[in-house]
Amino acid sequence: MKVFAINSSARTGDVSKTEIVLNWLVQGMQEEKADVEVVNIHRKKINYCKGCFNCWTKTPGKCVFKDDMTRELLPRFLECDLFIMATPLFHYTVNAKMKTFIERTLPMALPFFKLRNGVTTHPLRHEPPPVVVLSVAGFPEMSVFDQLSSYVNFLYKDRLVAEIYRTAAEILAGQMTSQKIQAIQEATIQGGRELVKTKKISPETMAGITRELTTFEKMAPLGNLAWQTCIDEGVNMGQFQKRGMVPRPDSIETFMAIMRFGFNPQKAGSDVYTIQFRFSGQVEGDCHFSVQDGAIEFQAGAAKDPGLIIHTPFDVWMDILTRKADGQKMFMDQKYTIEGDLNLLLKMGEAFSR
Ligand SMILES: Cc1cc2nc3c(=O)[nH]c(=O)nc-3n(C[C@H](O)[C@H](O)[C@H](O)COP(=O)(O)O)c2cc1C
Image 1 (tube, rainbow, N blue to C red):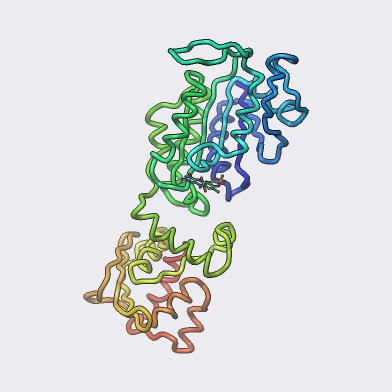
Image 2 (image 1 turned 180 degrees about the vertical axis):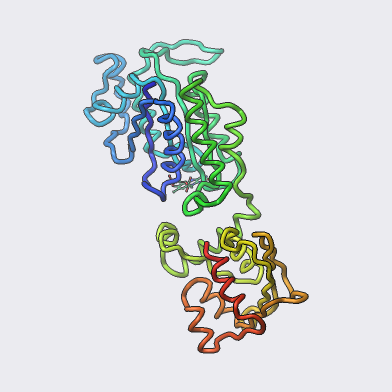
């Protein structure tokens, strides 16, 4: 099977979620011996269709432009057995580069009017390939793809063989060790295998690909903190992710959320302990967490019998958490003090290494 995939994301590598998900799908297809070509069209020259309709009249089937669309992309699109269109979701639909590609497929159609299921269409000059649409979005709800889905279903009708939509895709970057993400990766690879074998993706596999990663309630507090940290530090989100920056909590609630997120169950192993924080200064109050069987539980307030209590100004601990300050040095300088088992401080450093 000859597969032609185009990716319209402006980002590349491990910061492009479109590329990450497309690579998984392609891996599955290649495992089934498909001949897959992937082209990132962001770097290709594709002029805007100027609506001259020469491709319908003076030079039937041929566009007036000589660019990457006429030289390379349209011929490959027409000769493949399966076409994959991978795009980030921009303003609830395909991004502009992908839309430009779609508009430039006009030479494929004939000018005449034809009724199809009661609506006007143009018959096609060439038999186009079956289409897979793949898109990734920042928001967590599946309904974010409703407009795109409606559009591509109308556009490709029964040639549309699969729609692969990944919500909350920004979480994919830098979280590859998470079990949920590994399961999504495996399901997407399986989707690629199935597409080659049956030209469709089974409902079970699709459920695995699209499984919920997060909800507004879980994503928004951390996401908002991350954006605020970017604004405060004058960095963009790419730099924030590349530098492994940590969002700076502004309350005990957001501190607990960030700590939960940073917990690495593998590193915690079989340790069992409870650590309490007693914050002073800008934010005052207590919270504590307990580690048991590789799981963590955070609660506001004091613990019953903590192995360690950390007495610290809130700002000092947030400087340590966001790596603005060195924890050991701050301890030596007595910027914070501890009560209880010093070893637990070291264990905590290991368990929150994510
Ligand atoms: C101009 C622009 C518009 C966007 N519009 C939406 C949107 O409507 N809904 C959404 O959930 N995410 C939206 N996003 C977020 C992207 O879909 C998301 O970051 C995606 O992971 C980008 O894919 P990439 O990493 O391959 O570039 C938008 C991003 C940009 C830059």
